[in-house]
Length: 225
Length: 366
Image 1 (cartoon, each protein chain N blue to C red):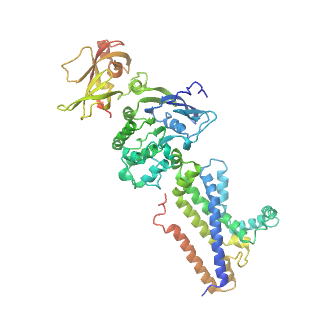
Image 2 (cartoon, chains in turn green, cyan):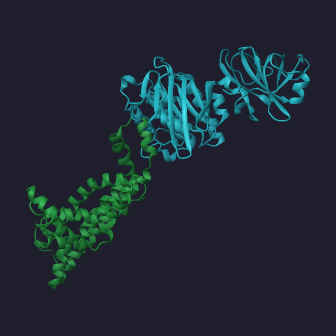
């Protein structure tokens, strides 16, 4: 029961996808979650619902719409072509875009909770101690909300590793470019290569467990607050 | 915005003018306060004390506002200096310490952000003043409520503020903790020349710390003036209170060890106070309750009361069917006496009457 070169390639690709997605998500979700945590705008509800959609939508639906939108005749697809970026579906970049959207709630929601729990008080204290807005964010918000960032990062990473439907719709199954582990396992099963499927599934099980252990294995999950 | 008549040239003043409304509450105040010493913002809850303090700090931004502190303009019709650019120190009701930093980290937070040339209080000085040396490596979660407030006060002082704003810093503490912190605040007042605005609804804290008193009521300034005068004004609710008292500021001149009595001289006379020895010249604050002062037309030298002062009646006001309140002056120092209306009539107490104020009890405030 050993892994083939193709299996290893899928593992590398999955990890690269998860890492890229997580990094982008943290950058994108932080301002979004900050806004959601503090705004009194009437748009808060609709935006929060939109962010949460990937939690309930079948991944195939999300993937289908993305395929249409980003495809050669879709509005975003036309834009990316006009910008010289080409067409995103069936590329690694396309997978990243799809994964970011599919995992958005896993990053936004823990951050939003952390920012809400933080409240105004420490920020006001920092302001009266001469800290400007960025200074406050870096030296007060980041350390006080660090468990929120950890949760957001780990859940985004883990969820991206486990993504299947969106990836299949958007990325197809191109070895070395878009064939991630979950799809590779599916292929093994289709081909009755149960031993290969076993090996790769075990790797995924171990990996996912290890990632989640980072989050739940800490002595006290609230120690950062 | 009616701020034009506020004297922009006067330097050592705290001038502020605000008008804003929340649902069910309007604040409309105009303040011109001394730029030194402690000013108490006193009033019942809901009178706008905290809102006013937050507006002064710039924590809440209101369109109609004017703030000028000892020459620095912080807000007018066109300008709004954000809180982090105002030279304020702010002590919140709940200490608001940073949970992720230990005591030293909290103290250094503001201190590090002040250019060294502008620091007027050394780190060690603040630590010493608030007795924090044994706590420096502790996290806020492991401090008592009183310790937390001491850290918060030191943290605010370390920004070398031009104005220290304190929002009921003792309100969240029990009686014992309050008594533990008050001496520290008194020490800060004595040692550092930083003007303070002190929000409180506790007469004890006001009597002990304040030099100037602003009485707020329903979002408006009901009265503003020097503490001693304002406490003795019969037209204000303060004097009508069951526990109404005046504050007398004096200096220790002598101590009688045999009877453990301190002789305190104030403008207008001397008082004997049971108290431990203090070095002569020590400034001391005394509190005399209106209900502890009785009146007599002649001096009763055969009385057990130690303190008998010649006084002149300024004003008499009926409190209820049975009681009257009398404002007296001992030299220039105001005194209140709460007596029965029957006695007031029997003695013929009216403005100008000369009589003897017999004082049953004097409390030392500091």
